[in-house]
Length: 307
Image 1 (tube, helix red, strand yellow):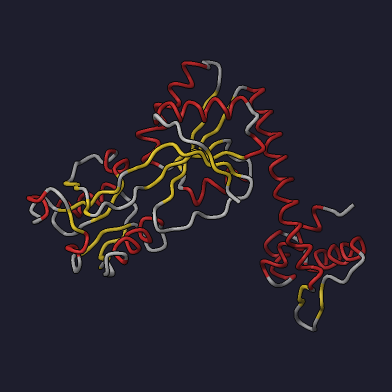
Image 2 (cartoon, one colour):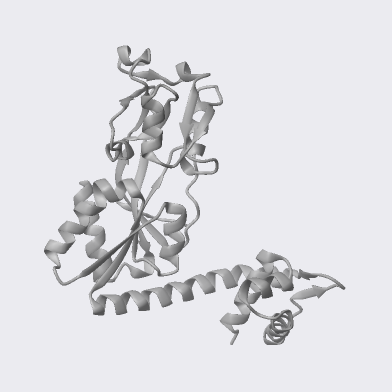
């Protein structure tokens, strides 16, 4: 039988490119990694690496094995995570990861429902954006995650993860109170061409969404301010320094209200989901937490499995 440990080394080599970088990244010596990969070749009965004076290259047989190994290791990881989840349930504990504005407006209500129904269940929550919480979910560090997807962006692949739709979060245009759009009660997105925008930091989902939404209306937004802080964003808009595109749920968590208007035509909403490992669906703690989140959001939608 193939060793999962050696399969993981091969997968890491396919990602990192050199035996030295695998050794550095995983805390081994290069000779140990090389010896383990040679043993894997003997177990498989095929040449996996073409070795040069200073480098190695994966053979087609190794490429095929890596593809299968990634699936095998993911399933082993899910099994290990589920074992920990069952043990946590026996101790009466469940862990949730959620992005901050969901924590303010949705998660607290859901956890209160769950606490009332299961007073002996220990509840733990972690503040995390989807880019952080989905890997934590796959690794078994959390049992359930609340995540979102903006329009105009393909969701990241999340094999073995079920994502159940909770609610749609309307997108609004935030403008200074003196802005000409306030009198109309709506914002035509093209009219924001040339105005300074505030958005999330470059590379964030918020930043990418602002650029994609404006691009569909024929212009590139001038992002003058980059911040992930809702308070700073509202201060910039309130001071007349910028405009922004923001989801309603996030705006409702702001300490100071700002002028937020619907757009014409409407921008597609941010969609919010509860996510959990497909293999953990049978766990009572997971089902009850998912149900509490659904009740708190008023959701009745179905689920989808990420391929």
